[in-house]
Amino acid sequence: MTTKRTIRYKSVETKYMEERAQALSGLLNLDRRSFVKASLAAMGAAAAASLDTPFSFQPIRMAHADIGEGFRIAYISDSHLYERDLNDRFVNALLRAVDDVNALDPQPDFVLYGGDLAQLGQAKELDLGAQILKELKAPVRMMVGEHDWYLDMGEKWRALFGEPNYSFDHKGVHFVVLNSVVEADFWTARKMSPMERMKTVAGLDNGWQSSFTVGDAQREWLKTDLEAIPTKTPLVVFSHSPLYKLYKPWNFWTDDAEQVQAILKRFQRVTVVHGHTHQLLTNRIGNIHFHGMLSTAWPWPYAPEGLPELTVQMARPDPFNPQDGCGDGQIIVHPDGLADKLYNLWNRNPVTVKKTYLASKGKTDRPEGSPRSSY
Ligand SMILES: [Fe+2]
Ligand SMILES: [Fe+2]
Image (cartoon, rainbow, N blue to C red):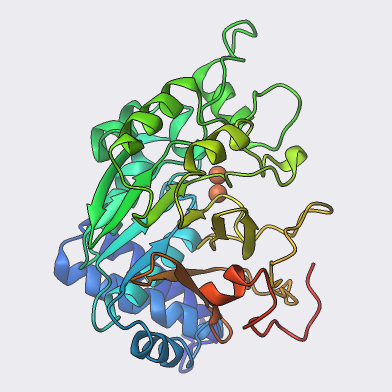
């Protein structure tokens, strides 16, 4: 005789898995209704895993009260999406970022997506990312990362999002978006397949791949683009890799950084915002203020050398929490062209790095760092 067992209580894991399944089924046909369902499920999954923060939005309101005539941009980056049936954790993380940004009131003027939308540049990964980003209420501007590009040399990315370098003006600020992950051909001589090339670029610097650059052609384009822009115009440049040399063995590096900095030198107020390094980084070189932004997928540890001294390190003390050290952010562009950046680390209080901190080279307004040690 067999006995039928009735399960009365669902474990946290069971609920979590059911919510994940619901989130993914919502993504199969991502119209507005199913997206809301998918987003709610993703938020539920995050809550079940104790990833939710009750503090996300309060400091954002405070920052908003502060901006005067300035405006805000939201920043989402480095989602590294796999196909949804291979990995849904990163999908949920991007859904969470979209939700966080959609909940802002008022909405940011636009959202900058900072690159590495895909993990291995595959059409399904990029399509999935494009589908999710379409749900942002604010207009979206795209930047490319190396993970998006080196399977088909940007063919799919360009078909979805257009050319990777462009500029535009917004409320008196000149914005430039660069493709800073241009590599010299290391694959033809080695007879690499497209996927071998992609995986080589996706790895750390193994001595095979070339360094990231902005490259001769794009530097010429940048010079021409900036020719007619008065020196006093505030300038904000988005690049995927940092436009300075941080740590080459991990490709935290742009090889022609000094040449790009030289092009930007005549401007009085320049802010460079980058992704790629998946961590809080703050730097100032002459007239240029650099802000490294968060990934939604995973945090990198800090490099063993070269950390910019203005960086207020984020602590990532919980190895069992895969979202620890991830998040999205905001750039608050002030009328004088300089920017505050706000990091929305998902499981702690957001951190604001004020323009005055960089302008004073760290003498005033040092943001409060975590009392816990970083790795
Ligand atoms: Fe990345
Ligand atoms: Fe990257």
